[in-house]
Length: 244
Image 1 (cartoon, rainbow, N blue to C red):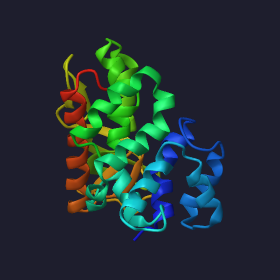
Image 2 (cartoon, helix red, strand yellow):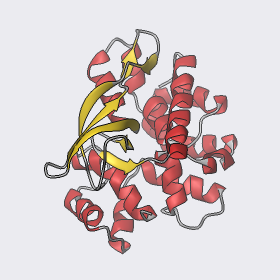
Image 3 (cartoon, rainbow, N blue to C red):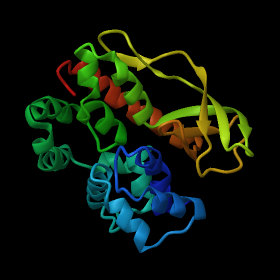
Image 4 (cartoon, rainbow, N blue to C red):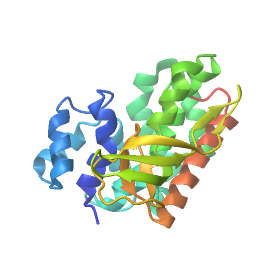
């Protein structure tokens, strides 16, 4: 089983490599993930993710877990598990207000509407309800908003073919779609992705993806959890027209 810090690196590296979040030392993060080793340097890199790290701290504190990079905590944030349900709405709201109200500016009130409706500290909440892209969709800026939302969320797909030599896989995956009012899922289509740091992938495996890169092989419970928490925050974003 992948250790928590390495699991974090697998999910965090794709956007970090694109310069979208986290520290500038992309090569160091890649090195840890590729070598499969942990250490103080990897912990320092993880702390540099200003978006993800506070959520890990919140989940850990709510569940009495000392290490924010405990595997259970990392899985809760990126994929979803029972730890999320232990985070009180009041704690989640106070946490979000402290860290994101200043950045959101006038957009904070829109975010605040979603929190008491059932938000939990899952990556999909940050993507759909904190980032500005859903709001930009509503403002008529479908491109690049939909593409960014679809790439930034942690999605799931089933491996069709794998090419270990090229480090690529073809997965069947449902993309996000936008009907002018709500976000939803389109029909499954094949999509090429990098195998990332996950080896031994075979046709039929279910995997998680972030920015067209495989992050992990998913068990059935993990797959169901990822779907459930993603669906929850899609519904919240759609049910609160002014949100995001």
